[in-house]
Image (cartoon, rainbow, N blue to C red; front, side, top):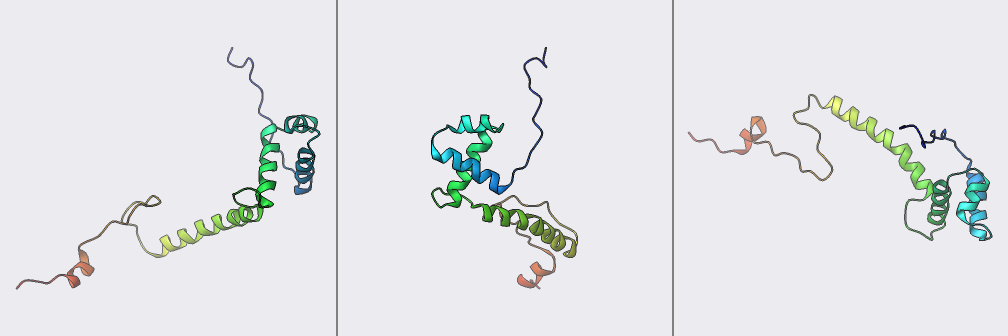
Length: 122
């Protein structure tokens, strides 16, 4: 009974920027609703709405990351990950687990660095 009424997931498709721009333009004209444009081109309404929103961001009519900023971010993330791994592997063994964003680094009091800052009693 569990499978009744469930649709198979649609395979992921990719579309050219030109095709997306054409769909956005059809939506902007106003003679058809977003839902109708999506149905006419066998697209999901959510995807079409996302394309329209992104076009508004790219045009400066809405706040958010532009398409070029998103592309740059997608390129920088793997590079950043690789650089972090390089730094971690070259700095020797880790003494603690990775910190979460905004979490402060632990203060280590001891070892050679701690001794040089403390006064020793005789």
